[in-house]
Each structure stands twice: as C-alpha cells, then as structure tokens.
Image 1: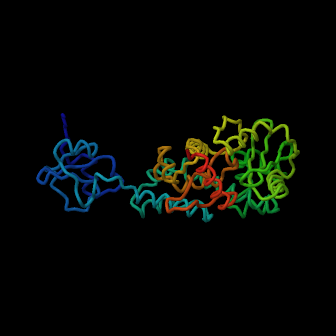
Image 2: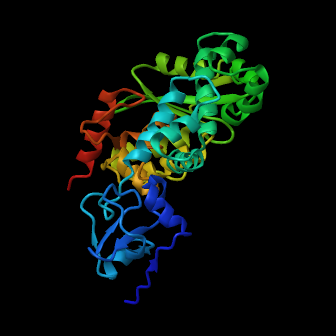
Image 3: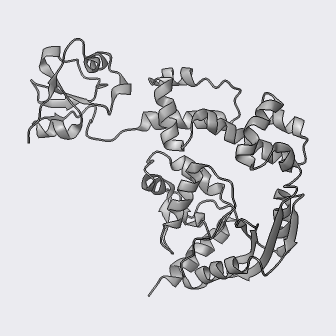
Amino acid sequence: MNVSPRKATASDDRWAAVQTRDRRADGSFVYGVHSTKIYCRPSCPARRPRQSGVSFFPDARRALDAGYRACRRCQPDVHRSSDKDQAIAAVCEAIDRGDAEPFALTALANRLGFSSGYLTRAFKTVVGMTPKQYASMRRIERFKERMQSGGSVTSALYDSGFGSASRLYENGAAYLGMSPAAYRRGGDGATVFFTIVRTAIGHMLVARTKAGVCSVKLGASDAALQQDLKSEFRAAAIRRDDGRPAEIVRAILAHLQSSAPLPDLPKDVVATAFQRKVWKALAAIPYGGTRTYGEIARSIGLPSAGRAVAQACASNRLAIIVPCHRAVPRSGGAGGYRWGSQRKKLLLKLERQRTKP
C-alpha cells in the first residue's frame, strides 16, 4: 500500500501539538518516530523526539501500514475517551445540581485540558444538545416539578433557576408544548380520552388525544392511574372512553400476549431529538431481549452517551410502546423503571418465556 507520511516542520500546527503534548489533538493524527519505528499520540508523555525524526500520519492504520508499531505508553491504537467523558459528566452533574449561570464551562474545559469550543461540540455529540440547551431543559423539568406540587409561576420559575419571567416564557413553549401559564392551568383546552385494562403485569392506562397516543401507564389500580393522568393535565377535559383508544389497546395486548409486533402508532408526546433517537433504538431491540445503556448509545452512534440514554429512558411516557424496560445497566440486574422495578422484572421474564421454543 502506498503510504505517504508528512515530515514534521517547525511551522506545522501538529508539531506544535506534539511539543506541548496537547490532548486536544489526540484522535486527529498520530506521529511516527523514525529511529524507533513507534507511533504515538500527540499527548504522549514520552521524551519528545527530534523534529527531523518525526513523520505524521492521519490515523493509526496508516502508521501501521508504514511499518510502525503502537507506543505502549500512550496506546494510540486504543480508543480512549475517558477524559472527555469525565468532562461531559462533570458538566451534566453541575447543571443537574442547578448551579447558577453563567455556567463556568471555560474554566472546567481549561482545567481538563480542553478548549471550551471542543467541549461544547463533544457535549452536543454525546448528549444531543449543547450545554446551554441541556441547562434549559433541566430548568424546565424542575419548573414542571414545582408547578405540579402546587407552586405559583413566580416562585417556581425562580426556584427552578430562571433569572426572569421573560426567560421562562422564551424557552417554556419549546419543552412544555404550551406556554408556562397554560401548563400551569393543566393543559386547559385539551381533550384526553383514556381507558384502563387488566394485563399480566397489572393495570394499564392508555390515553390519547386527537393527534395520537399521549400516555401509557402501568400501575396497581384504576384510581391511581387515573389520578396520575389528571396530575399532568389538571385542567384538560379528561374523559373515559373505552372505544377511542381501543385500537391502541388491542395492539399493545397482542404484543404482550403473543409477541406480535407493534404497529407504528401515532404519538402525541413532546420530546427532544435525542430522546426520539433513543426511543427509536429501544423499539429496535428484539422482543425478549435487552441492551445495556452503553450498547444503546453505541447503536445510535454516540458511544459515550450511556448516561444520557438512561435519562431518555426515564423520561418515556409510553410504556410498552417505547420499550424502555429492555434497557438495563451494565452492572447487572433489571435496573430502575418508571413504573416499578418489580414490574420491569416481571415484564422481562414474561417476554423471555414467550420467546422460548
């Protein structure tokens, strides 16, 4: 194979990255040392080679083709993203805690050896949104929790981290699907039709609007499920109608009882692009099977997004239809479930039994 490495020059930015052991350059190229026939990452801690004895390769494969072997210290042939993952996790944790803005992203990036621009891009790749968008989403979630607890708009917006009412109203509709005031009124003007049926895993509530299914809940009693539905849409016209959701109910029951595939049901739920990507990956898991959060993250092309995948599963409002029960932790066991871990274990057990010959 024809391999044409480029020798290092003083004006080359890559040589400057090698000289400073810049971790931000890792993954963009490797350099080979002529005398040892070893190739390294730009951040390799080994003694710096002479400029005249170095050639650059775009990736490890090209270096191998040229007859170089991987450095044992920096392991350039091993994908390593722990530093980046730790930085992204630190950003998520700080935002989840509700730390005051402006969030010190630049300081954190500098401390970990990244530029703020690089960390922002990496965060968006893994989580599916920028740190600013993630912070907005988490504030809205805190706002919803406080509103559902009966608080006023004013107290809820400040407790949630909004600096002013204008910022709440600017961002609220994108995540609530309505203005904050309308959300506080519990979906005033909407009509939700629901029914409740008994299944092998307990009571199941299925609700829909004119646009599609908006909620599938699992619980121990009709009363608890109906109250849970009303808590989200307190001012909506909620009507029990066993006929309107009947098609959806039949599809779900057939899926539970005989592993029949679920049709592509119309859905009326608000979700981010990342959440929808995760839900689509969940729907692709075979009946009776499971995947770890990390495996799901890799399946959508975001191998470092295991944490974000778990959060997307927790935000699912369509039990069974979006099979988040098939997402499990890498450490083993069933893991958490919005409708109870015991119900999740039973659901997985039933699916496995029905897939046996």
